[in-house]
Image (cartoon, rainbow, N blue to C red; front, side):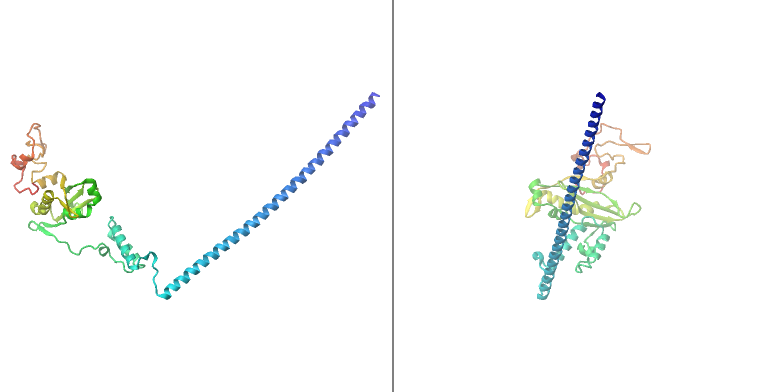
Length: 333
């Protein structure tokens, strides 16, 4: 009896296992079918969306193309009508002549920024293909004068060109500058430079000014010769006369007298001795600060007296130390 009961329990357990396995297989089959149906629905929806998007892009592109063609056609019709009517295309109400003049003015300002004349000429040759009225050469564009008024300095020494201080100030000094500074003060520099390199004997000696409060230098005058200007009076005569008048009476800017002064002169040692008509820094009495007498030591001038009398404006002008001065007149005093 016990054996039969054990067999019955074993048989019932095997039947339950088979029943559970068949139920699991059925549930898995149902889930797979549901997943397949969902995938089919999603694929169908994506296909419909792609078709709609494609048709929308094609239609939008066709609309854009048709609108552009309509605009181009209308513009061509408008141009043809204007040509037939003999009218001009007055865009911005600026005539063609005005555009050409504005172009020349812009090119002139650009060329004055330090561009080489060769590059300006190359650009003009290119632009002339589209703007035949433009000049063919940089000199015509910049309105370079064909001749410059100069005067001789000394006896066959060289030539001097003088532009002037006030002429520069009339261009540089603006109402905004005067409102800010109330007066005109300049720095002046004088120096020599070889014209074509160190081996060339020809030299330029420019007089350069710079407005205090502005970083742009301007040229006051320039000397050119085979050596430095030996006749200092002729070299600086016009400059000294103009600066003396401006200092006394002021600079007339826009009909108003503005106080004027020179703050400092900027020169190297050679330039200072040349302009002041004194012995050079390598001379026996070459010290600019005191009346010390130098001595030669190892082919050099040495100043050993540290307690020598200092130079002042009064002692300089009265020539108390005559060995320090040259015989020629100092135009700058």
